Image 1 (cartoon, rainbow, N blue to C red):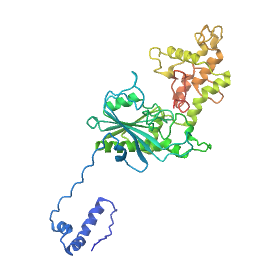
Image 2 (image 1 turned 30 degrees about the vertical axis):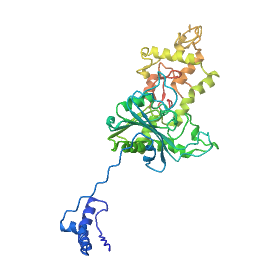
Image 3 (image 1 turned 90 degrees about the vertical axis):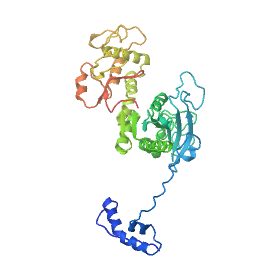
Length: 425
């Protein structure tokens, strides 16, 4: 026979007050149930007797860095373990091939685990849109070396790195180079990266072969992958060490910076600290800004400017604005260098702006049209395709909200552009 006692209560179900009230109201009924015979545990509670202590469940054994982890770690039906690999301190961090003098080496004993989280997007073999799911790679130090902290790295570019590749370690699309990951593990961190739900460095995965939008992988790429990365890293760490982490951090730049902002917006409780560096956001402006130099060169010159010329003018700008010893500028917005007025940059006998006559006879010299085009590319998009004089543009830039600094790259150089208009994804 089973007795049930139901009592209504004005207090909110689930609250501590409700639980206490319900227990007290139910005690007489529970006593009646127990008095029917047998003198069970309920009788002991009512009579004031101390019941025997419950038997504590056996603590689950910690996972080891061995192939049995593939079956032992199964947090849900969508997650599978692809690879488990133990690296000893000093060993080359390779899954295949022969190590060279430049091959990164493990700074500490490290267990590398590759995970796959489905379902992905089925499709034709070899199509960029076809994927089995989200690839995740977790690196775990020995239990004695773990600092009880997790450091999750964001991606670079379009991601699509080697987290599901059984012959190569993943790098988050260069968002976290192998030496960086090895150094973090050597300091005691559990670290992890993902491929953001696809393989390949370009953006072709976002469209299916029939030109329709790949909504499944768009969702994985935009936010689901970073959530699964956080969740699965924490679950694996707990299973591996037998205890939860104390602190978790997100570390991302460019694409990883965008992911950081998305994480803070959609999953704010996942991390104790979020580093959102150089976030690649506002894609309409971002990608139109990235293609703008090609538009300028095609429209104004009919052909690209030689890389040697771009490099030479970029170097001149850096040197003219106090960055010669560093190779970059500390205060880009204060730089007013103008190649159209630099006789050393202009080709011999070319008349530039402000009456300057060029004297450079090297192959890296620029024409006035090329120098003007470079100013336009540095400045960024405008309504009429022009660019103001760099000598007087500083005040207008400072008064214009959201300006990015003069960014000089090895093959590309930009003086200033709206913050949403240009960047490196």
